[in-house]
Length: 82
Image 1 (tube, rainbow, N blue to C red):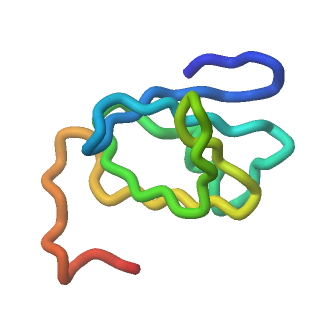
Image 2: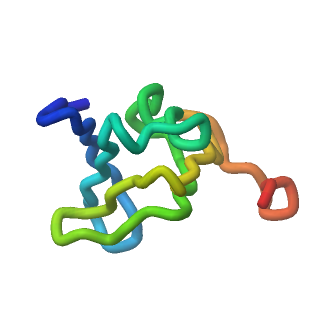
């Protein structure tokens, strides 16, 4: 995790390839503070992010859900929660 100007940054991977993820301290909430504990290889769903030139910025409206921890299989689609 990189820190700069009260902003935390991670690199993620998606269908398009690598993507930058960032969260400013002022936008941290109970729904997005899981960002601080993400590990390499975690499979997550992020909702409410804002697309930026450098990737996705998480806002106070963003929510992070871990679908599978690193090295663990993904659940079946019917097992996933909304």
